[in-house]
Amino acid sequence: MTQRSKESPPAPDIATGSPDRFGYSWDKFTELSPVQEEQFNRWSSALPVEQWQDALFLDVGCGMGRNSVWACKKGGKGGDAIDVDERSLAAAKQNLQDFAVDTHYMSAYEIEFKEKYDVAFSIGVIHHLEHPQKAIQQMVQAVKPGGKVLVWLYGRENNGWIVNIFNPVRKLVFSRLPLSVVNVFAWILTYTLSALLHLGWGKLPYHDILRKTDMTHLKHIVLDHMIPQIALYYTKEEAEDLLKQAGLGDVSSVWVNKMSWSVVGTKK
Image 1 (cartoon, rainbow, N blue to C red):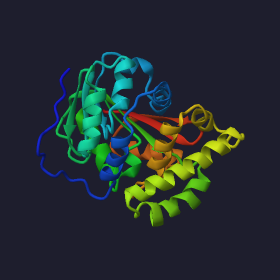
Image 2: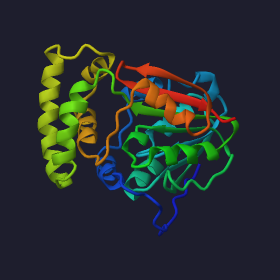
Image 3: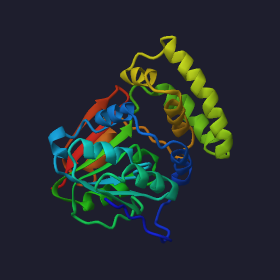
């Protein structure tokens, strides 16, 4: 299906966030792989697989469109994917050219669609926003009554060294450096991480995924942790409360890789 991306879009309400920095990343990495599909299956595990069947969906903060691809392959009939960086949308349009998904320049804070979707999901975006609750509320408005809102969030559990050591360094140093400089540091950290992983460091399920990830993708993962201006980490209770406070019912969560949260709720 032919995608649409608004030309010369008006500036949306973005507030503090990192769309331009993630756009830099998605402009460099646009490949799809089985490892990414495995990640999506875990990140979306709070939503029963049968809920994807023939579902019309909204992908909030679509990046290069990979999660919409996997949603379609799980049975979704298509829908819309939104982002606020043109490089990300260009990559998404390319990756989604064989799927019934339209791309749009649109902020998570100003979703124009109302009561349209069976599922609205956001993978790895909400925890990078200045106002996560506002984005969740917009997603709730976008789904039909009885529709599902699904998010994947960084967890606090088992991420103590990231929260207490890496995250302060990211905030004080990497989030302020030019992206070209951060990109060089990312390669250094990637080779270091790869060596540690293959020497047996890391016993969590996510470390097993990283061990079978190629160097280009591994570097992309490292870079994505270095570049954001905001990175929030949620406990199980905080992750579920984020959806409950938006008025969603039947909120449940799955502990993904013992270090992040897949959370889903139903619009009443």
